[in-house]
Length: 227
Image 1 (cartoon, rainbow, N blue to C red):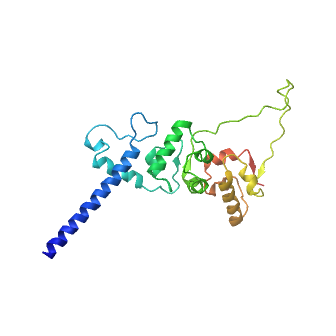
Image 2: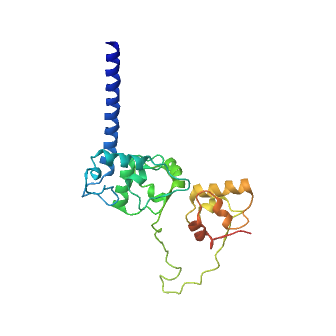
Image 3: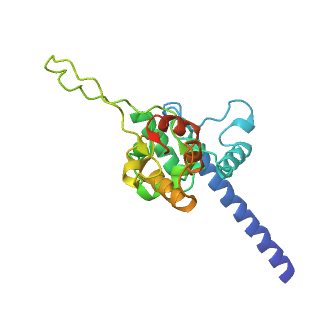
């Protein structure tokens, strides 16, 4: 009798674990599968057979596998295009916050930068610092142009003077932070790399700093100098 009771208890425990697993998968599917009236960016499984219905076990398992898939080395999630499941793969972002990010992007437009991502409730400085190496932004920054001096009064504006290039090997973190696309975190990374490895010999070497890729180097090329 003791053996039968023990076997039944084990079966019951397995059943409870299975039910809990299905409940979690169902919650993820409910969060990630958008309704027809929801904003773009919500996840939809393909229509068709039972494997493609949100409530099916196959669909829930596939969804859970996508969420659980770790980021590859150097992989970045495009915050201006990613869906809920892609956001949920980021560190510190769960399905609830991922859905909130997509909803905010649909309501107010692309984020364009980490500063734009900060407008999502629940995302603060510490989480932004954690996300910085793992996100990118495909939407261009909105151009802001101040009126040229004298143009309001009808007086021709003076010719612009030569651009003062930032010396990448001598600039302080504050000076580097002012460069477009750098910000406080990358500025500190540049200074730390410089202190550890010595001055940069070429602009291309700046690409060795974490978070700086070919696109960023192209933006910085006309603004910095490497003596």
